[in-house]
Image 1: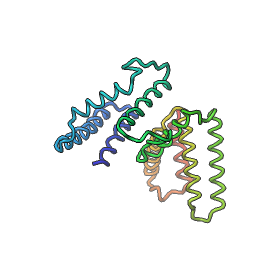
Image 2 (image 1 turned 135 degrees about the vertical axis):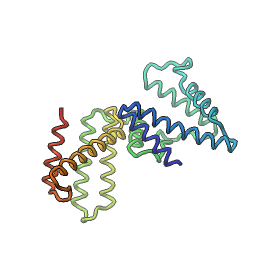
Image 3 (image 1 turned 180 degrees about the vertical axis):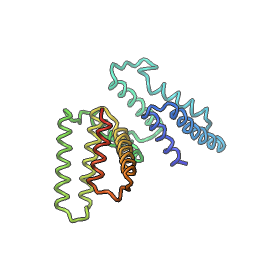
Image 4 (image 1 turned 135 degrees about the horizontal axis):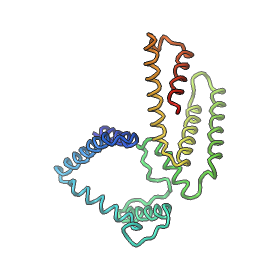
Length: 235
């Protein structure tokens, strides 16, 4: 069931990203069904009800947003975030939970790695540990590419853990470039995946029209069709 819950949540994200409102209505219903289902199971076990879930999130929204529902003043988004974080830390202390020792504590490792990278960069930036300008980040990416090239040149034919580490450093830098530009890396990569799939499938169809299969084509033939498809998509 946990896997299904994650799948439904991603389908909501996909529909929202595509601005497919008919699909979004449907996917939100599927997600709501799972919320109701879990709540019903908990109710049968005497733990909580769906009404408790609604009341709890309602109370949390009011409690954690005193700049909206209370007397706290927030002049900008940064001040609003600081207010929200202060309330959350008080809640944790009141519940007897460990107050975070590090600014980076509490990030769920089960999140997609692009989201973790985004959150790490965001929290570091809150205390000024941030790139001064986008050009510096681009230089960092070029540096990571250079280091990867060096490792690949020095390694035997089968890449080792050092190469894997450099690939990870490159991905982390790119994820932070997305964050710095106020994009969500996960959404950027999702759209890139969709674009590749769309173009690849169009290439398949074009080659089929010529009476051939992809495996029968040379790389040069496929690249020629691919380039033509890209040109057709360009306004």
